[in-house]
Image (cartoon, helix red, strand yellow):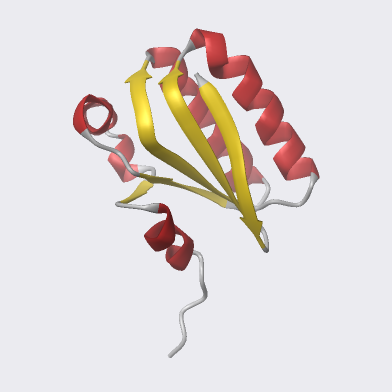
Amino acid sequence: MELALGEIDGDVMVVRVDGGLNQATAQQIGEQVSALVAGGVRHVIVDCSSLTVLSSIGIGVLLMLHTRMKHEGGDVRLCGLRGLVMQVLQLAKLDRMFQFYPDVGQAKLSFRPRSN
């Protein structure tokens, strides 16, 4: 698994997850989230377009990220989900907790304030 921190646009950070989100990667993501929040990031986009494995521990990491960001007044969006990873999240009913977007661009737009 490779975790790549992408660009920061204001208080929005893109985190790209390649490979698997499982026990081996959970600690790394937890540390990254703490650093992001300490640095003032309040909105995180998790780009799952290269995610191929999602274990129950990986789901726990996403829930931890969601809880932490909500506590700090922020939010998390998931994008690029497909195949088995999408099915697992839907079966776990996490599509009710997270907002899913087809790509990073649309997820970024969702954080922009709406004008009337």
